Length: 287
Image (cartoon, rainbow, N blue to C red; front, side, top):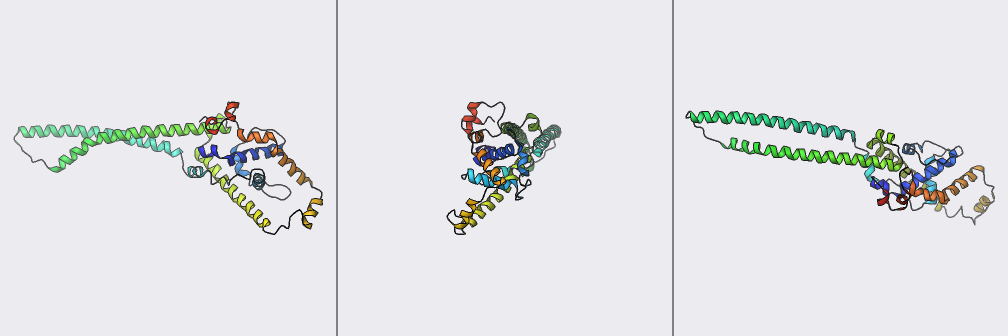
């Protein structure tokens, strides 16, 4: 959660996707579901049949060249997506049941020991002597250590319960910060959320690397596309097509001050204050 909140590339991606969606749909939506990030590679344009994720990478490299591949910024999210957090609560409940059963068995041992001590006293009164060995002494020392071990187990279980509850509550607050409704927060699992972001970051890194590699190859061709060459002059003399005009309009929308200010309030919460939006991340985050 801290890595996602601190990643400026993630904010730029959300702002760019939101601006593209508003531009294509002709609306002014305040946010979108993060599950839509996994569909960017499936949506293709009607002209070149290229995925929308490719256009997002191209725009980010043009408008925000300081952005990263995102996947290297959120390594903890990738690791968290491999765990099933729904099993943690059941495991804790199972450990508590085992600890409670251990206390019951310890009580049975106490009763058996009392009966055995009572029998030894009767034998001694009857004159029967027995040599005490090392095994009963070792067994007695282990028997006296058992209550302390079980108490430590109970304390650790309480700590684990508290940690699990606080992490889940912080995760829910983080979803509210991203713009999720309370109903969606209750239905969203941590492992599903992390896997969605992790899979998208991997696709984004692969697509971004392909775009960067293609640019490097074009740059190594020796300036065939330079404006001073005959090819470049012919391209400047050509009339722009409708797709070029729409591309220019989209880039103009992304360069507007409204889009720039939206980078700091990507998917805002309805309860957030303006002062929180303008402050640093540590003060803005309320989770």
